[in-house]
Length: 426
Ligand code: CA
Image (cartoon, rainbow, N blue to C red; front, top):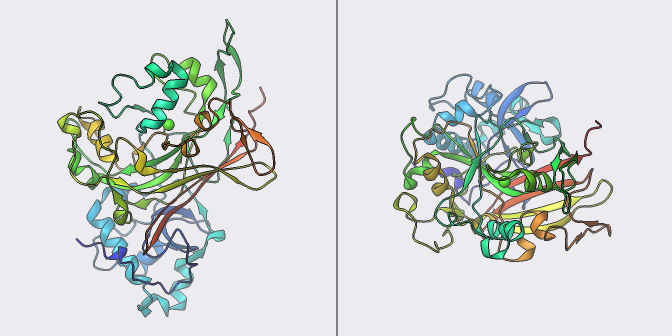
């Protein structure tokens, strides 16, 4: 089925600024609370939030097989569960409804009142109920940098790394939408030179620049997903800040990997940009440096050219860009991650979230964490207000941004913005 929603020539009757992350070619999906305290599923064009529940009730999705309440829900899980064909039909229809030449809604003032909201009239919610969250570790540059710091240059990459898209099962209860604050965690650490562990607020709270993909119901228990079919089961992507406490991590991560260092908060951008909307930005993945097992070998382009940026804003002061990276640097792509995740028969459900792992590029200004950018605090970063950062300070706000751009269109993710509050008093 063609993705007519991606037509780069299409213009909308809504007023949008030229460089918006959300032109009519994007049509992401999210969940928001309206000014009347109603939760609904919606999309966004320019700076308008569009109530899909209201559109459906008013008959604008006629001819598409949808249950009456599909958009009158507080999560996208059921809609995602309907599968790729439905997502395509709905995106294509939304593009038609808001096409400049289509008068149906454009000239219906009464309907527009029920359907359109400005962004300050809505409050974004978590778009899905995340049943399971998995985090990968798929950037070779990141794995090499962290491995060098934790184990030395000679043991930087573990022997399995070039063979396996390494991952672990994370915690979904602490996934929060952009705009919700995180809090500095308490925990056990073993400071350098100490002989006994100490307990206190983490001193080394860090961001991790990641993206996460959201799946639909993909496979029955016991059945793997072939690598070349994996994209059929990926609904879309969000920006993902996987907050990490490096001092807690260093002490706890052997032998089972990170635990409390990672599960106190992970923030996501609220609009899920569909894989369909990202089609024009497909690119080759990095060439494998070692032959991969057949179940991980794929055909065609499976990576996406998504520019990524990280900013830090102190409590009083403007934001400073501290990193510029790109999703295409990932050594293991999403298809390989999903194929690997299910090769043992592990089943994947609608609304599951898979973090990419920190996305570091080849140059020091493209590293995806403070751990790497400041090389464990040895090279502090200067912010525009003159202050320095080794890690994230109390009341700093970390902002992730992401967008794709070619000569025709810009498809963006908006922001993932989280303020770090001081540790609670104990
Ligand atoms: Ca992570």
